[in-house]
Image (cartoon, rainbow, N blue to C red; front, side, top):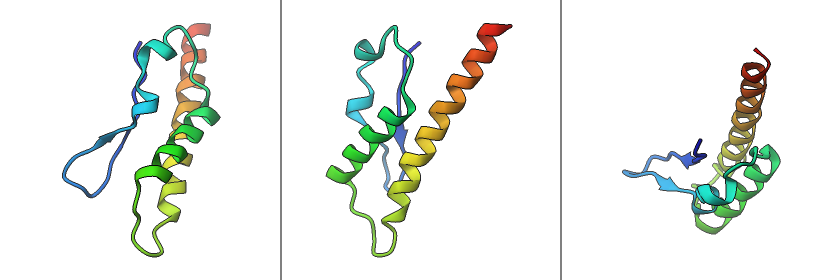
Length: 82
């Protein structure tokens, strides 16, 4: 299974979060939600330019990515138990 994280925006194209897309580095491992959040925060700190009073949206993006990773892990565990 390949792990890939994308972020959306109002821009015309999406930006791949490079540090999260090295499938070889993640191969055979289970994603760590907190680590995913940290990598997203690092990438957003480098490249995001939110409008005034919209910086909270960057925190929301990384928080939602962490939640999604946690849910995927739970779903995978439930599938493995059945």
